[in-house]
Length: 244
Image 1 (cartoon, rainbow, N blue to C red):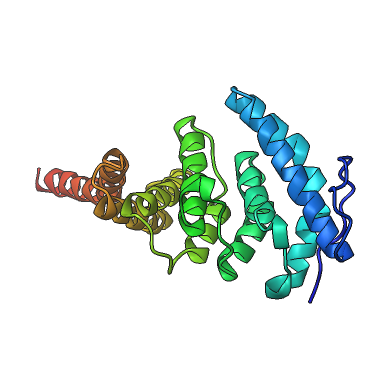
Image 2 (cartoon, rainbow, N blue to C red; image 1 turned 180 degrees about the vertical axis):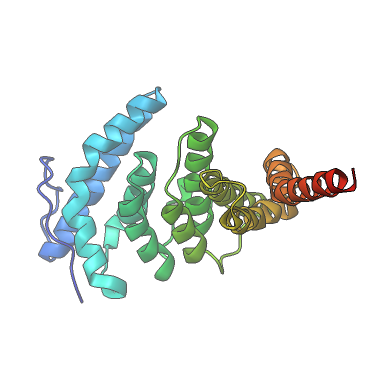
């Protein structure tokens, strides 16, 4: 059984020094987490909370790496809340690739979330990353499609509210639509890309009819039919000219 590494926390050691080194390290990292959670609770600004989390994260890196290396057999003991909490903090700070490394572990081994999150791990992962993507897209900023597709694959079999799943489909569809918009609408590749984008957008509407993608769907459907209409018009003009 793999054990997580000891942690240089800078905090006072637990009152009890009994138990194995791994158990003492777990108690120490659990104490650090409680200390940091109390500190975060005292901060009102969301941005300052994010900055604080970014400052705190390196203190847990070795511990989390030890848990990931241990796989299913890694016992966190009294520190069982640490890994899923760090996963959420990584999402909050925009470190999505690292967050997904932890998410893979959390979902694969069904690691429970701390009760304060009031959701299952798959639902939280989908909703938090989808919300981050939609926020960026609303500001006309791209969001990594690879991250969204990773989340989709990771949570494909998980049960969650349809509204949450709709958000993920919306975010994926908008990124695919963005990619389609970089292609000349007169080229056949545009139709392929636009049809690909329409699939998750339509699925989002099927899951939640107020998800807010009707405009995107209408625009893409119009763009797909426009080249054909243009060609027909040109052909009609040509035939008219020949008849004259």
